[in-house]
Image: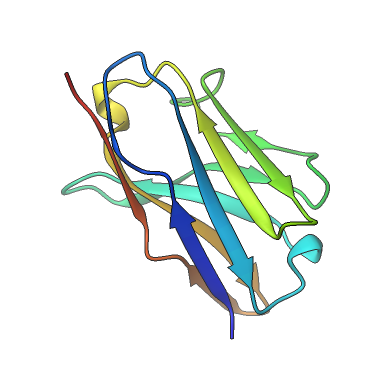
Length: 116
């Protein structure tokens, strides 16, 4: 079955960097667009970045553009989110996501806390 497993979230100081990973299995990873979402306490889950099949056609929401970079390694079935210049408002649970057929699939999420 489809599985998405995020890792890499932790507590980091403002201005710091983190790299999140999402290991995918159970589907032809290289043939599907992948995305990162985040959900802060009391707020909706929103897309922040997505990437096409071959590290092309990346999309970023305005709040993270220029600071975050999404990439993928199709040989490892893994999508990454490099996060630089982190701010307290980046604190959230981060989820990776893909869409297969009519279904959305999500990982369990990884907590990122930006605080001094």
